[in-house]
Amino acid sequence: MIEKKDISLEKTVLVGIITKEQDDVKSKEYLDELEFLTYTAGGEVLKRFTQKMVMPNPKTFIGTGKMEDVRQYVEVHEVGTVIFDDELSPAQERNISKILNCKVLDRTNLILDIFAQRAQTSYARTQVELAQCEYLLPRLKGMWTHLERQKGGIGMRGPGETEIETDRRIVRDKISLLKKKIKAIDKQMAVQRGNRGKLVRVALVGYTNVGKSTLMNVISKSEVFAENKLFATLDTTVRKVVIGNLPFLMSDTVGFIRKLPTQLVESFKSTLDEVREADLLLHVVDISHSNFEEHIESVNNILTDIESLGKPTIMVFNKIDAYKPEPFDDTDLIEERTSAHFSIEEWQRTWMHKVGDKALFISALNKENLDRFRKRVYKEVRKIHVQRFPYNEFLYPDVEEI
Ligand SMILES: Nc1nc2c(ncn2[C@@H]2O[C@H](COP(=O)(O)OP(=O)(O)OP(=O)(O)O)[C@@H](O)[C@H]2O)c(=O)[nH]1
Ligand SMILES: [Mg+2]
Image 1 (spheres, rainbow, N blue to C red):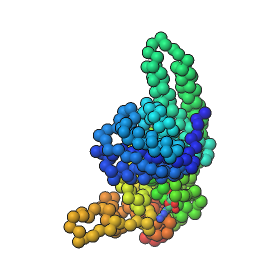
Image 2: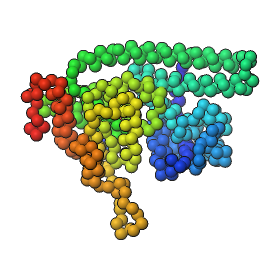
Image 3: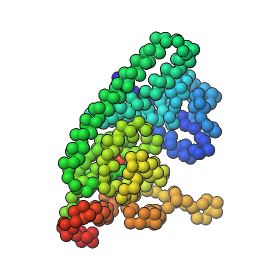
């Protein structure tokens, strides 16, 4: 029922705004990410449009003049899709589509589309479809009020309105059907999780594309799909890992992103159960990404949403091989030294200050510092394990001995 928007090889342009809270540097970073999302969805970005404004225009998001620039560009270059970095209201989307006469997507829509493309198992597909329906429903409602106003309201039940009412009912029925389906699979999965016994459970969490699956593969010698696109992983994979005789379970799951559509967080709640039920979180960070600190914040926000922020957590800074500080000229009297100029050692000190020994710096790709990683994880898992099984503490030596 939900049409999957195939934008493969489609020419696209991006639109973002610059505001007081979102300066031009931030705006550029967000558009870089939007471009990566577009590329992941199979699109090609020809141009970016940005506009400085106090607040978005309620009718068309950007101003009339800028919109005219976009329209002309779209016409001349035969652009198929225009993608906005922020969520558009149903009315904005409608108005803009009318002006631009091409497909109009927002960030939420694009992420939903990528999830739809990438969902492999029937479980992931069901969850994505639920998110799509939840996204669609208020938009149908928007169309309804729109028509209502056009017809003058009360007592004017035209055919359009009935049609949309029917559509809404279909979508609502679909939503309850999908929810039932998910509930059934959930039960099955809860049983599976129960069968795993009381082994300590460790979950890899983090922003998308930071290297969670790559790390999972080197630690558990499994072959989870990893690639340089966003949302390579949608389903959770669980593997038994043994370090120094101590067995535990490690799970790799869907990556997070800034402004992850709430519909997706909602419908992926069961996939995220693995995180919620974990004893220890390994929060993987791509330190080579210029925006990694904001990524940490986004991840922590989502962890808060799923009531998992307070869990024992080790920060794992990955991709140290690719980290390059911005060059700093100390003879330059004007340029101020900032964290962008930090060396890895400085980052290590900074994080040691923040979280003590709960920060690790590794390269999953080059297998750098993996020994230290194993020891640190062992120590933490052991701590939880001996609390749970006090009688076999003697089985597992203290960390120094492994
Ligand atoms: N340079 C470098 N690249 C890495 C490292 N670890 C992973 N990568 C690359 O980063 C990209 C993403 O890796 P994944 O393991 O798929 O990342 P993920 O966190 O599982 O991503 P999602 O499943 O999309 O959330 C791949 O191209 C990896 O080869 C590393 O230590 N250094
Ligand atoms: Mg992955």
